[in-house]
Amino acid sequence: MFDIITIGTATKDTFLRSKKIKVRDDIHFISGKSMAFEAGSKVEIDEIITSIGGGATNSATTFARSGLKTATCLNIGKDLAGREIKCFLKKERIKINFITEEKKYLTSASIILLEQQGERIVFVHRGAAIKSYQLKTKYLKTKWIYLSSVNGNLKVLKKIASYVREKNIKLAFNPGSKEMKLGIRKLFPILNVTTILILNRGEASDLMNLPYKSGKTIVRQACKLTPGIEIITDGKNGADVIYEGELYSIGIYDWPLVDRLGAGDAFGSGFVSAYIKYRNIKKALQYAAANASSVVTKIGAKAGIIRNFPKEPLKIKVETL
Image (cartoon, rainbow, N blue to C red; front, side):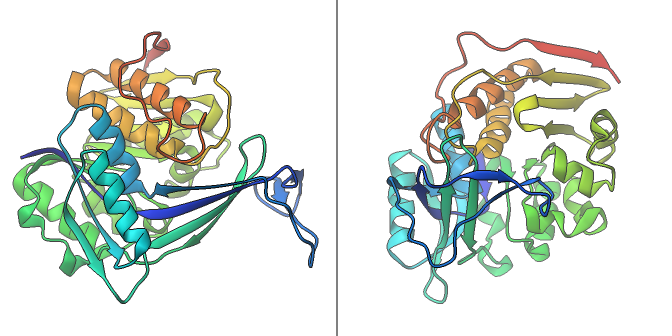
């Protein structure tokens, strides 16, 4: 019996870091910013770093380092990147019993252009991804499942929803962009059995069709999404948790920012791991904030993942909804 099994994706990440990569104000994009290069130019790269990414492996690393008996369930290509992923997971003492391989697709990969202040553009190739027939739920003997992106595969989502309901397994759900595009109606079966839901502010506003600027309204309405705990992260503004009519708010540590990639995974999995261990919302939030703040001080989604409860945990504000 595992404490937790993660389900989702694994990727081989390549970071390209250069002083030539600049972020500029640009009204043509929603974010108001862009990165651009002259067509035909040659850009000098100062540093190339490779690492393992993907929601399932990122979250599994947090769980394993926090001392939980952890396995991961995902699909990879039968290639060098896939072998590297399995090797990394073994070193982290994460069981790979539920990993499937196939020759038809390559392992998912991403190339990240990283500028000096931590802003980045991620180019993603979505390769092998878990399919419904590959997901042998009857073998997933676990107390918790942590579900990240499965490339919007509705059959996989419904299969997991049915299994956790049947076996009374606790489910943490951190959907990706393709899951968000399905909308509330199609996501209802999985949301209805979710114990902990992790969204960022943009995802929550889109899912509930609320203006992004309506910050507290987004948070207060989020409690209607699941019968469990809702987490809304908001980058440098910290995060909010809604639980049993109470709103818990926390900030972030003032640590140097190197790379934002993986911060969301670190926060969500950090919260879940501490909640499993302590059954305490405040401790779970403090662990999550420390994990996410630490991850962004390193390049890659795993190098900064913590192993122990923070010595100086951040203060938490609590108010009644």
